[in-house]
Image (cartoon, rainbow, N blue to C red; front, side):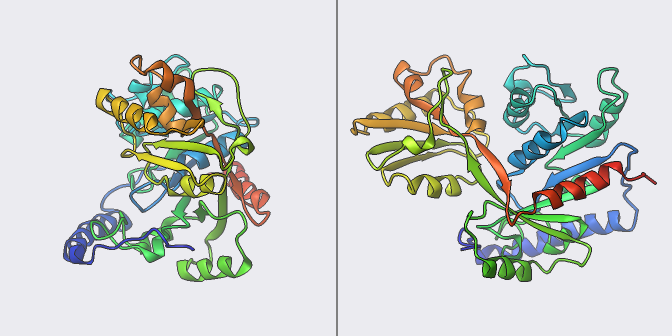
Length: 360
């Protein structure tokens, strides 16, 4: 059910009230043009949220790349969270993950024709892209996780909210996980409820639509995850997810913000799952490798494997000290976004109309 992962720390609500005052003042300054937003002739699409934690921004950015790259020259600009570099960096095919961060590295590997860049200062990043000799002909810029970066005024804001932690049921930090008050959602042209069950019933759609209280100008879409074939991290072979049976014991290894949906989906195939969850964007060290090895050694089933995410794979791949036994058993489970209710074309049309409309 929607909202089933929400936990409110009510004793922290006084601090949330103070936090809300600070955020409210900042938004007031932008809304009344005291702090200036910058616009661009190039179409800028922001994929963001108003919550802390994973709502599926990277998979949805990849969904846009998959559908727009055949017709447009697309640039993705990200902050490059937890990268070991500063300033602007333009990703090349051989750019190390440590320089640009795990999610930008993942996107560059999956979509080599895409322009991928990182810069915590989005205005500087966009300006550099539009004036760089190799990227000045970009058609569209996708801003990954920049809804709160109001110094840039994106022409189209796609706001994501997790089905299991709807923003309408949450509260401000630190009592909850909202980065902004719920009214901030009004800046978005479209809201996408992510990580939905694929078999949602019509009544669930209506309940969520009612709870979000969207404005008449706002579009509402629902999406779910579709899993690809399991791929060994250190080889080229692949295996269908259907090969997982009740006899398979899985060690689910993740360093992402919200692994619960992945866990629930795997539990439909096998109940024998051991979890090893690390913080989002976690860089694995020698102690972590020891923990993984110990957890895997405790699994005595004849059929056992380690399943991780594409994002985690980008941080595991460079580790030279991974024991051979772990390398042999680590599999990556890729995910793709699927738009529900047959509304994929409607979402694409919204995006297409924005890209091709004259800019004032």
